[in-house]
Image (cartoon, rainbow, N blue to C red; front, side):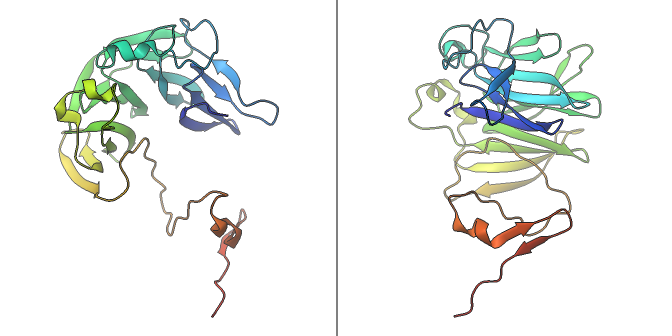
Length: 246
């Protein structure tokens, strides 16, 4: 169904996702379109109204820990009223708001005992101390930041073009309206930009970034693409069917 899914993760051999349209985190099986497993305390029912625009999710030791959203309302798309400063970070086990007044928060990620997230409407990567909740800006980029992964002290940050016809995005400052989508690599200790990959073609938005260590020749496709018939994988190996000779 049309759930407007955002972050998706594997947890204990199951897939769970942020069900943005129904304002909850849910699991999936072959019985229902989704099964709610958690929702913010201020959400009173699971209806397709995208009440707070839940988006980012992070696990700690295999358990749900943090979630971000663009608002704290309980009515249809109420988050749009204060798009620039109405975002929040929640502790899932406590079902408690830890920080509010955030600027379109996305992509909460734990790394070396610190929590990092992106404030999209500011173009900033921020570091948060989980104990004191002190927040510091690591780097400010010129673009709408979404999508974050951290490895070896480096943050890989996605930048999307702002949708030109969106009345909601039109409220954002010009500083986050990038000309192209891109991925920036940033030293999280010093805030230095180490590199950038720019997409000047059809890629206009990036939602998430994941690293695949020691993987080469990655093939990603769905059932809409007949090439899936040429790929076979097993626990021991992967095989590609050789193309027919003319």
